[in-house]
Length: 333
Image (cartoon, rainbow, N blue to C red):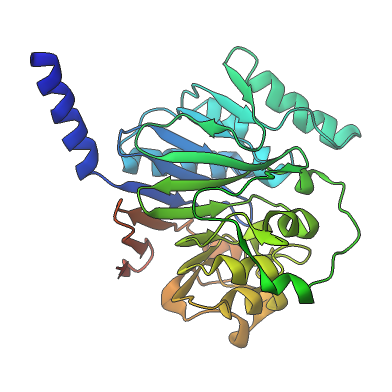
């Protein structure tokens, strides 16, 4: 009887908590920290190496703010410097309990080999899992489903997906990208009715495979812009089919946030707001959102203080977005 009562209390406690997601500023890379209702944590990528441990320090600061003392799962979407570079620096600051990646590096050469070796050395004594589309990462309180990994994408619709996509008729495929970008891990995160999509740096044709001829994903509440809002990713056929209520652009001042990609996201049907980690210099006044929705509006790197954007989601599908720079908080029913 006591065990049943304790179980009921635990369930009620988890039900009362939401999902918190910190989009950490790593200057145009990715570091997305998720804290599940259970208190378990999942970090997607670690930003850059170097800069006196700048990105690892920012991740550790966000973890402290979130009240966590370890990273339960570290997902490395792919092995480019702005995603995997900070692993060794982070491992020196926070315990990492499990590593998740897509398998061997698809790129070779002195620089990619050195990056991959640094990553392999950092995870050498820690449990590691190589994932494939259709698999899930076991976090209590949320569902993390893999949609893409190692150049492969899911062939079956997820719950809520599968409808024909009329936007496919007007989109053209491009030359296949064979870089690490196309091998990115992409995932759908669910917390009750709330849905968030993170496709790493997945590129054009792989994205089309997820939504053409049928949209295997369905609609999402929050969309993290693919590839930082860069060319070669995020055709309208996927972004507009997703119908995100809110988009978060993890761009840098001079990386990502290109006008053409910004236009696709900003014009997505049903979009309520676009939030940016940085003012995009290439976009100018006409291709950046209102400054209130930008975490780091000053393009001068010397004045960047690493402000983050946070999403807090409830299982009924409602969520809020906040800007750590100006404390702007906006709720979405």
